[in-house]
Image 1 (tube, rainbow, N blue to C red):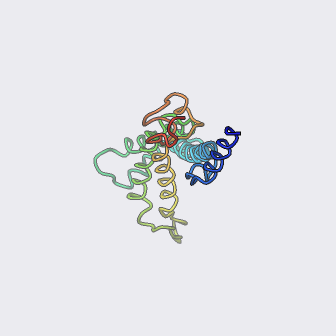
Image 2 (image 1 turned 120 degrees about the vertical axis):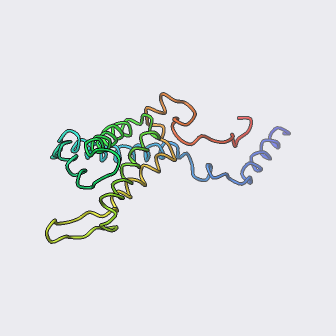
Image 3 (image 1 turned 60 degrees about the horizontal axis):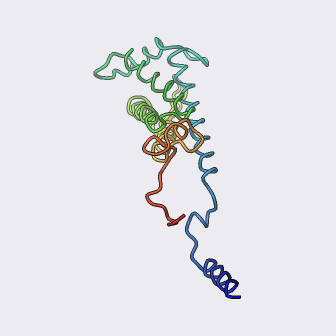
Length: 190
């Protein structure tokens, strides 16, 4: 009889204990990792697609020489236009591949962010947020698209790649691991 009373008392106390946020939300680890995978695949493919257009002339692009010519029109300081073109195209191609695979994800977000900031400062920023239609040149894109890509990359920089990634497989803990690590175990003794 005594054991039944103890068991019943423990169950009642457990039910009355306040629930922690993870208990209230249920197990979100898989859903979060799936969302991060979709974010990585989308951002990675977009970056790879546009980088391959610039670097290799794939997907209807004109290749590195045409992109360097467009970079020359921007009159960027310090480096020659061909160097700027190669840097931007390489950041997009290789950054996109790393993001899709989930390898060195946090590091791969940095050239994406820098490339998009440079694109805003040199090309799209002057066109405003949504851009405008020029009667001669046609639609001039604003910086809204670049801002979305920067936000996606920043989210991955802050959260990490998730459990469905090469980083999670190769690195168990630390900066390159699957995502934010708990500061301490909330359930002591388990």
